[in-house]
Length: 299
Image 1 (cartoon, rainbow, N blue to C red):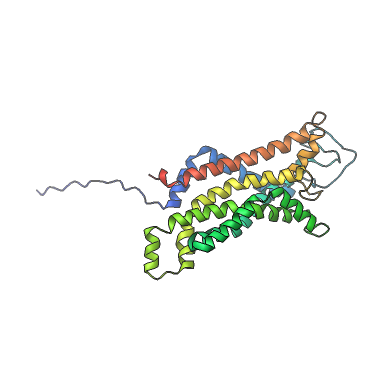
Image 2 (cartoon, rainbow, N blue to C red):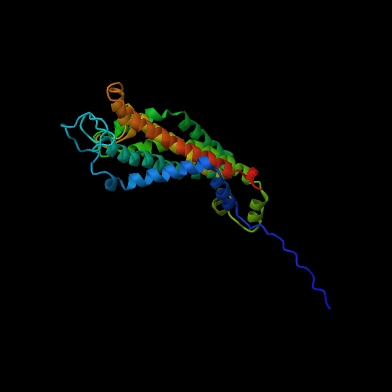
C-alpha cells in the first residue's frame, strides 16, 4: 500500500499595492470614515437642495420675519423672512465649491512650479523659489481686496469666482514647496537612475516617475487645505467682501446672526455648527489620509 503524502496548506496573504494598503488603513480609521461620511452626506444635500426644501435661498416673506424654528421653517427665518434651512443647505454649495475648486487652482499652479524647481535645480530652482517666497509673504486678505477693487463693477467683482482665484493665488506656495522637497528627495533614487539609463528624458521622468511617487503628501496637504479655504471664504463673507448677496454663505449668515445673538441665537448657532462640523470632518479625513499614506506604517 502506497502512503499518500500529506499536503500542507499555506496561507498566502493577498498582494496589495501601496494605494490598496492605504485604502485598507483608511477604512480602519473610524474618525476619518465618519468625516468622509459627513462630507459625502453634506455634498448630497447641497446637490439635491431643490428636492429637499421647497423654499429658495432668496425668497423673502416680510410676514414671517425672525420666526423661530417651526414645522414650516425647520430652522426659523432671518431678518428678511428667508428660510434659514434653505440658506444653510444652499450655503453648503458655496463652502464645498470654494474648498474644492480652490485646491484645483492650487494644484494647477503649485504642482508644475514645484516639480520644475525640484528637478531642474540650479538657477531655475533659485529663481522659482524666490518668487514663491515673495508670494508667500503677500497677505491673502489684501490680495482679495485688491482683486475686488480692480474688478469692481464687472461680472467677476464680488463673485464666487473671484474668491476661487484670490484664495488659490496665495495658497499654492505651500504645495509648490512640498512638491519641490519631494522631488529633491526622490530624484536620487535608484528607479530614477534606471529611467535615465533607459533613455528617459527630464519631462518624462518628472511626470511619469517622480510626481506619482510624490502624490501621497500632496493629497494629504490638499485635504488639510480645504477647511482652510472654507474658513477663509467664511471670514471674507463675514467682513462683507465675500460672495454677493443674496447668494448664501455660512460666513454671511454668521455675520447676520451675530447682531441678533441674544434675541435670535438660532441665526448664529446653526451656520456656526455646520461650518465647524465641515471643517472638523475634513480635518479628520486629512489626518486619516496622512496615517494611511505614511510608508512607515506599511506592514
